[in-house]
Length: 483
Image (cartoon, rainbow, N blue to C red; front, side):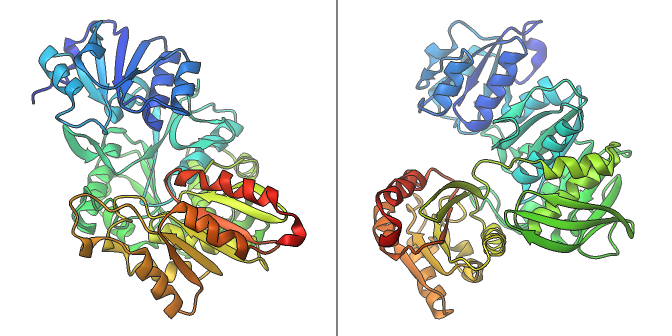
């Protein structure tokens, strides 16, 4: 299949942009940004339903349900192709035949919004969404009105994007592939001026063969930084230290080690917040508080402080921005408290993210039972690649219920993750754990086990059959004395 990405073939000016795969979170956000910038935007998807359909309807975009040649009539000036689109998609084949100029999602983001701004890119296997949200919110609190696109709903904006008037663009630098015609990582398109690298571990087993493949992609990203740029790197992660070795610009390390440019100490949990001291080049820089639990969120905040310092934001404004951060939906989000039972929604799925999240919640809710509901749903977590790695990650949980995942097509059974096996391994470790075939079984088993003041952490990168709302409804039916 031959496509032309030459924008010189597009009309000048571009007026009508069509988006294939418009109902994805990032694609819908891009549609909103383009619409706000004055473009006429149309789109198509195979699954047009709430909440994205309601969001798009609300901004005057009415997606076409299903893919086909007819969606390219009237002929758009430019098509943006999402990475859910395959080479054999009928609309993609019609696009090739019509020779309409096209861009991938990250190419379009760079062309229309990043290239005219200072690009602040947050990368890493974990912590991208939280760290980029913290950075965007702090810039906003400092009066710098950034433009951003992030993979989660930032509560300070009630959106995952914002078209600002300031000079900065904050992006969540995703290492996942770009499109069927471009298998390189998305973040290679984001023209970084300043970058944060939080971590580098193996993930995305469906597109990366091994850890070395991921490292190669991060090294390519590092090579994009200009000589006057800056990389803020978590150098206590050996893989991060390796990928920045040949950086063409200044690298400032951050972590707990006092020898690093940025270090933190005296971490104290205070309910849902965490307080810590930040040091810069061995000197005390500020006492900071972030309204998030966990040492990992202190590290994320420290990286943000380093970037803000570089662009001239004062320690006081940084302190104010971090302390006022309102959080992100689906990142340690309290969905409700009913009859003293707290229900929390979190996106964690990689073993490291699971471990850090549960440790943070155990510290934040000291003295309360922590019950974990885990749904392996990503392409990597449904493979046996992390089967052993998950075992020590649930040590902070007093009871763990694991949903047996849907099997991956074309993957032999021996290479698939087993919830039953993980539950057995956790019990061998002295932990309470059960595997469950589906969400209904989880709820049936969970409800009789709940006690007053329990904290239920639900970990999944998907909707999980609306388990959060269903659990809260069932809790409403119970009186406190029946728990």
